[in-house]
Image 1 (cartoon, one colour):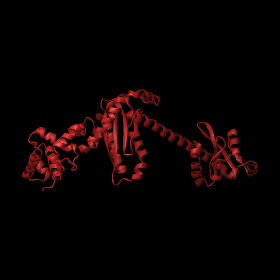
Image 2: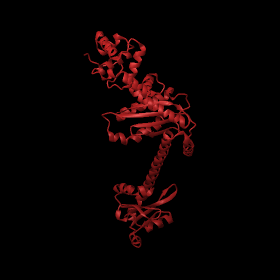
Image 3: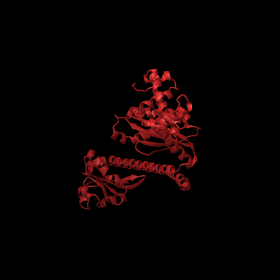
Image 4: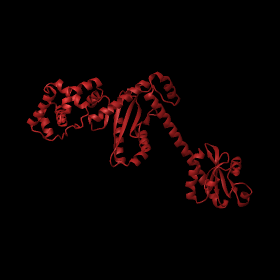
Length: 398
């Protein structure tokens, strides 16, 4: 560990202290030094310092009697009560002696800081590896995953749900700052949302994160405290980073199979929630508001192709976008002609004309509920580029 951070410590400390420095490892090899030419050389005096286990002063005469030693003060560096190297400050021993203990403490503190950072990274990698296997390994290999989970202290018998967070940086967001501040947002989630030591967080991509939330409740979605924490996180993102996010919550599950099913459900829910244009940006797999988009998103390819083939004349019509948006608005307003006409800023007769044109093209009777359902599902499944926004239709009169 000391070898990886020694030169950085020397560079930073020398700028402040204004005295040359060196750091050797436990074998007396210089691993950090103001004079780069000395890097990798043996510093025999450091071995002596480690043996004596105390601060040693080297005056001009004493230093000249040794090889590769300069006048100054040398002190052992400790980590976890074990000497791991030696700090050397070059200069008149009387001048630099007052700085020795202070710099030694600073170096030891940086060693601890580096250790904890590396430990946190290793811990995160362990969790990332576990989650990757949980999501993508077939159940036939469950024994290997269960063994690994047990080895790192993860209890697969606990009930959990998968929560997906997908970020949408705004035009005001700074991409460099957004990437740089990932760890800050992760710390926020651990401090305010992931309140169980069995909760896990991993980055699937830079813009999509996964939370494995442990809970004793029958449904985490009904937990008011959890809802407040999630909403507060969204507000924090918007206020601090000009970033919005969409969150989907899968069902509770146990074991590997339960977690995989929760993740797949959360993915489908997120896709359906986006198509539903819900304003709160938090979607739950059991929400009625996204039930229909979820159903449409899961249409069998055969059925989707049949609908497309049967309605190809409508899809190919030059006025398709206008007719499609008109019909979707008509459905949204419970097939009420007056409300639909007002929402579209149309004369009632113009609305009737458009609906009649759809009837003529498709052969569907829009006065029949079943026919309306078929057309509605087909139009939503086609991902019509004219987005239907609740109460905010903007279809111009022709």
